[in-house]
Image (cartoon, rainbow, N blue to C red; front, side):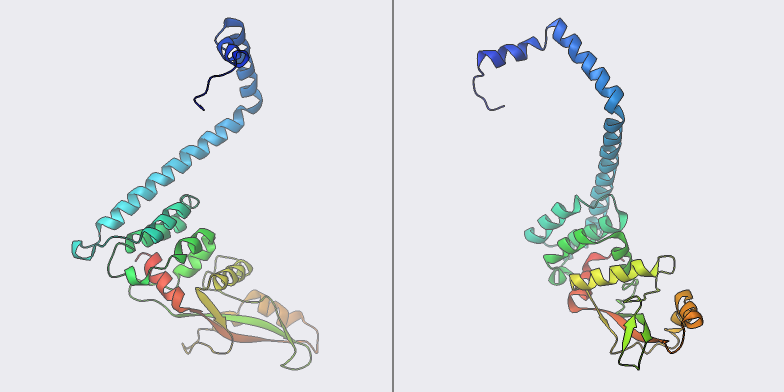
Length: 256
């Protein structure tokens, strides 16, 4: 491999591999290896096949997405954004939600309607996202518009007046009712760390009845029923909003 002349001892050892006794030993060792470790190789092969399938899906999805860009809007993509997206995508192609985000990012970087919103950090943000992060950020986009804010709340335990409270847990988010609210709370904190959302309890949404679902949440109902006096619980209403970076991220990285 190094294109150098091997010492005679090593050269002879390599040649001996083709001799009958050595070849037989090699076969025997190989057979024993398969008996002991064969399942590991099988699992690895299965992973490779699965990855190759996902990679081909990614290629086809990207090709289809690029082909839908009107010819008059096609532009040369940013090398920085595209190279980073492809590099980071290789770690995420097996997750549909993340793969589709990379597909949107790369194809929209070639579209003049979106190019000004593309930021080099988007590829790294997607790479660090969990599938749940992706599902939550996707809620901010409908087919017609970008939704700026969604409802969130804290269940606050009051011990000695409104200025002394403990939130349990930090953020209650119920827009994905089939997902544990504590997992959603973790994802909101992660999305906030990425800089794509901000969480505030200083303002709330004006949509009628949008916070009613929190009043019927089992955790809230249970605490109201079983907490001893003088501990009180109340709901602090708030909003999860897209930051300016988040608005560009949703516009670029989420396909309609």
